[in-house]
Image (cartoon, rainbow, N blue to C red; front, side, top):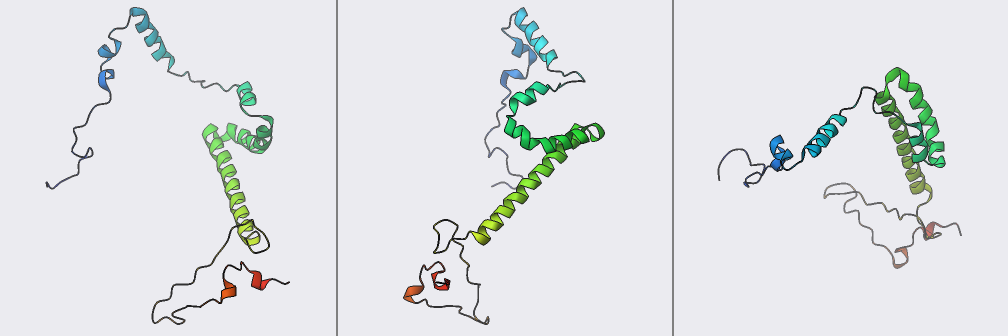
Length: 165
């Protein structure tokens, strides 16, 4: 085995994926003059004018339904307030940072509430079964071997033994 840098292709000869598209002459081979003119015009059309892209307000109304426009309204107002002073990129960044942070906060709050107050026990079928693992104890640690043999009535009680009834 040779010493040195590993091959990025795993020893296989690399193949160009460009094919005939590398050469303009080969790209245009077989095109009529009208097709060449159409292609040249298409390439010119790909260059945007300084005032493009133009934002069409009707596009916003059609794309977003009324419910979505309602819950987007507060951050749309924030974005429109930031737009003249900081530009579209900064306004877009802050709008999305605030919204994503809010949804992450709501998700963490919901998960905390669910684990704290909706844990599964013997009184309900829903909820997650939250179990606690025993701490790892090694020989020589206080409390080793941390083993407790359950009685027959203690298996799968889901907190029934702590019930107030």
